[in-house]
Image 1 (cartoon, helix red, strand yellow):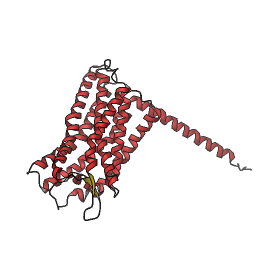
Image 2: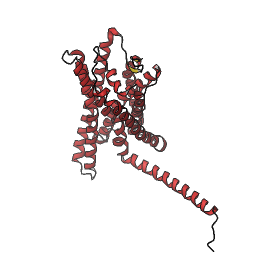
Image 3: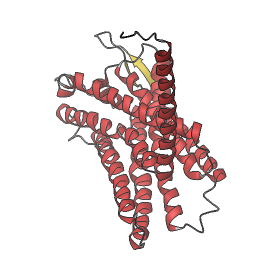
Image 4: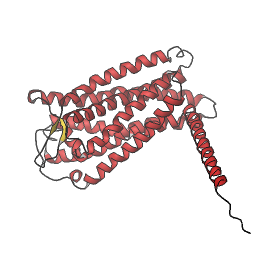
Length: 334
């Protein structure tokens, strides 16, 4: 599947535009490259975090559980990206890629929110929340989140189908029943907006505003660093997800408004959606940085692992070099 056709086909409408837009011409080479870059960075960053968490860290707290599940969510999104560029010509791969993408989208948003709630409890209610921030509650919350995400992602995976246009290439996008097509499209857009804009974003803002108030009153030497991290987390979430949800909202208006229901508006919104979606997908690449590498506990564990590995590699290389040197005949100069 051509990546530049993914978004516009995913948000299919009743009218057709025959005019050529920049997304289908000039962006035909740029968009796949961006998808592959996000795939490589997301896979590498989240893979490192997952490797350290499973091999060198004992999952004991709610924070560890949420971080592990957030990594798994981001990996689902990252793994689905190359499939959107060159999708296999089979219905199972189409449904699998759609399922991974939708599941990663919803679960990732939920787990970012739950990480914010966990930090809110740890800082604002440090004493009273100690009994609630346990491994057991973390597992229960994670299981509930995955079940909810599966329920929300299932309709798009069920309706995902392959369609072959005149040029012979296959496109993977939802094909809804004709009698309920408008209803399913509205449900998809409404669900995405509610989850990201009207549920998760207010919760994240509430948590970090209260954290910011508590941290600003403290006399800790790391206060300025903590405040910068809070602003980074909130700003990145807003910059990555708000533009995408605004465009999704415009898509919904396009369905019910005659003013926006025309070819020119459709091409403009589709082009904007392409880049808004790429910006939103980039959030799966920055999550390991802001939630793992910045954390002192994880950073120390990673540093210990890397120092141990490089020390072992250096010792192995040195022993090999010494053995080769000792076994090499020395030619006398005399």
